[in-house]
Structure formats: structure tokens, C-alpha cells
Amino acid sequence: LMAFILYLDRICMGEIVKSVSFNQDLNLTKEQIGRILGSFFFAYALFQVPAGWASDRFGARPMLTIYITLWSIFTIMTGLVTGFVGLLVARLLCGVAEAGAYPTSAAVIRKWTPVDGRAWASGMVALGGRIGGTLAPFLTIWMIVTLGGWRTSLWLDGAVGLVIAAIYWRVVRSNPQEHPKVNAAEVALIGAPTIEKRLSGRELKSALWSFARSRSLWCNAANQMLSNVGWVFLVTWLPTY
Image 1 (tube, rainbow, N blue to C red):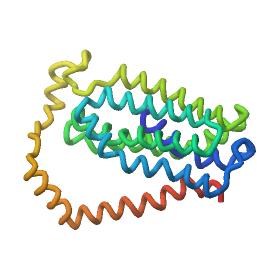
Image 2 (cartoon, rainbow, N blue to C red):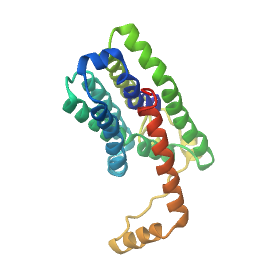
Image 3 (cartoon, rainbow, N blue to C red):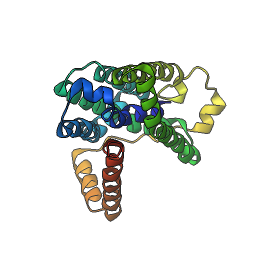
Image 4 (cartoon, one colour):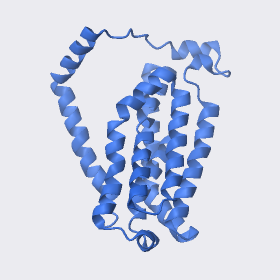
């Protein structure tokens, strides 16, 4: 559910900016629309590490609830603004809030799932996102046509997100031991995650240098960057053209 609404809220703008109601309402240039569409992804990329750190520091349950709530509110806000600057700020804030979704999900999976089940659990998160991404164009167009405008579609997306945030807060705990319905056998099956000591300044410097010299890490980063450049184009400008 979290990944579904995550992708629905990030991809919907690609459909909205080509709608008649949006263009008649705001009358923006293609350059302004490009900045609005791109702003989300810059903020999303820049804030993934800080958002992941916050989840490790304060717990996955409260932080992901906050992230879902915030990006849902900012999605609603996107449907309220009346000009270029407002849209730009709203999409930047959406990117900041959504940045914590996948790092925090990884923390939940690491603490809740035995090692041999983590690929399946990660696949379920990815599946939710892919379903959201696949249905986003159809659902967005349907809402714009049925509800009478682009703003209403964003308000409905945001409202659904707030409901999902409430469900997440009720169902999930940061650690299995904190959940009232988890018994001792389940805790034993899950196992305790390895407690890693904090790195000293010298150890951190050494670790970063090891990362910088890793050919596999550089290749993985290049693959992620290049595939995302193409993917971002597909979900922003392809609907228009």
C-alpha cells in the first residue's frame, strides 16, 4: 500500500500537466512545466540518505508514518496552488518527503524478516510500486475526467495517502518485540538483527575510501543513474509527446 501510493503520487503529474483543465487553469510554458516535473526527482535524490538516517535514528514506524503523511499533505497542497512557484515548492516538498520511503522500508524488512525471506519481502515492496506506477496514468486520467478537473484528482490521492499512513501506524512496529501480537516463537524465527557499533571518524574515512575504490559499486551506481534518467523521462515527458 505504501509503495502503491508512493508511485501514484510521483507519477500522476506527468498525466496532469497534459490535461486540458490544467493548461487552461495555469497556462504555464513547457520550460516551467519541465522544472516542476524535474524538481521532485532532484529533491528525492538529495534527501534519501538523510531520510534513511532519520529512520534508523528515530524508528521506522514513526518516521515512515510521518513521511507518508507529509507527502500526502503536499500532494493535496499541489492541488491547491495557483501558480508556477507554488507548484514548484509543492513538488520539491513531495520529493523530500518521499525520499524516506524505500530506505525506511529496507529497515523494516531487515528487522522483521529472516535473511532467507528478505528477497521476497523486498519484491513485495517493489511490486506495490510497480502496480502504482502502472495504474497511475489510467487512474489519474479517469479521476480528471470523472471528477471534473486536475485538482480534485490530487486531493483524492492525498486523502488515500492519509488513510494508508493511519493503517501503517496501526499495523507496523519498528521492531518485532514491540508488537503485541508477536509471540516468542515468531521472535525466535525472525532473529535479532546484528547490533553494529558506530564507526569512529577514522573507521568511517576508511570505509568511504573503500567504497570509492569499489568497481562494483561504481558500476552499480552508473547503472542506477542511467536507468533512472531514462525512466524519469518516461514518466514525465512521454505522456505529453
